[in-house]
Image (tube, helix red, strand yellow):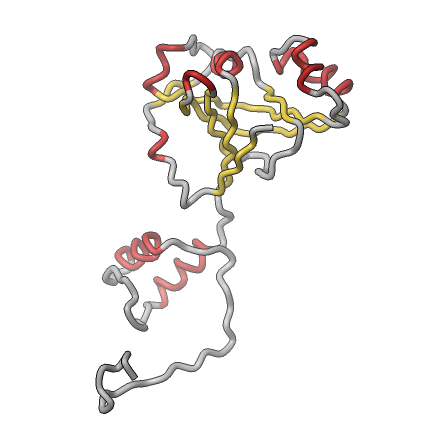
Length: 203
């Protein structure tokens, strides 16, 4: 009764039938953007409200879109430099990441620098024995045979993550030779972690 504040207050109940979940969740900000777009007021939903059919259709349509995936890669600065300069197009890992092909990639330079410096697109995932993987990607991985063997020591399988469309954050473009990559004005704070599935892959 505390919700109604008075024992004589008027109340009503709502019965739900044929309940259907949206394919994917929608953020409150996106819902309110749809409301404004369709002539409604922004809401915090303190109680039930009537939603225009056009707004509901837009909400449902937006929920059918697959959420974007993003792969967060921690990479040693010397290999980050090779990626940005176009000498390295394959990043090596010991296991397959959960992000699908086509995902955006955030490139984080480890040690000393400890900063996000670029983005890329995951164009292909190659899985093979270390011996076969070396034959396929040794040049594109831009590592020596001794580095490769040390990394995959006692590993039965290796993974090659093929990267394309590398974009360097503006504040770092002067630190690298960027003839083979795209310079763009951006900042990591523009990447909304609440919107995107981030996969941390450090191994």
